[in-house]
Length: 345
Image (cartoon, helix red, strand yellow):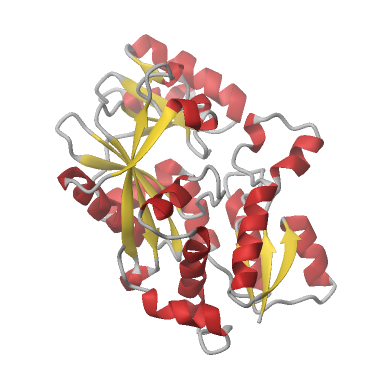
């Protein structure tokens, strides 16, 4: 069975002169090697494709695959993560992870919060500010507030300046983020409680929360926030702990509810933070979560519950095979994992 691998390599864009932060969401060679090795171990014939443009060239040349393992993030536009799956849909090629609608929705944190809140998922009040005229939408939000770009990942744009204490600080923060990222700013009350990321594997009724990591900022790091600098220097700045207490159980329930409400597929993460009362609130969904074997939250979580990297990739693939009706055509090692769907850790 042939499986393609689509991705955007960070080094390629850095070689073109793009700055470090602009490419923060893109993948490293170690990630591509890890995924390709795991897929080969499952019995697939793997083709490394690359991003949108190499995919277009191969498709127009007539090349096809039985399925594609897609981790291509894209680089430009609010729907950049939707570009590769939209092209695969046009050519009727199945792929892992969520469809273009869900990827576009989840990347825009404001839109994701609207949908999640409408589906009853506990969510902090928020405002999306695209211009000074929108500042009134934040008038009733309680200070301190927290502002970040509405459609970035890897904590891009999150700095100590993201937390503001007074109304007169809001416009300068927004103006700075508008200049840097050319997109609206998501503003919400600063949540002072514990921060969690919930790992999810599966789709719809078979989706399960496999575990909950607490994200703790170490002494000496930028305090109180999972900032871009803290995330980049995570070994010094961040402690990740697998937690199973009552708060973690509540976080897992909220995370799974958000995953299902947004119609995410196969595997990923949901990030939450607790308010002053300890209630975990939905922050954002990551339906195209990082899979770097050395530095990605979902991989850390899988390791802590006793899954190898290959086992994590295998369960994601098993979910995609099952929902695309490809179980019978799959290689035997991949087929063997189909029985694990619907099982929590």
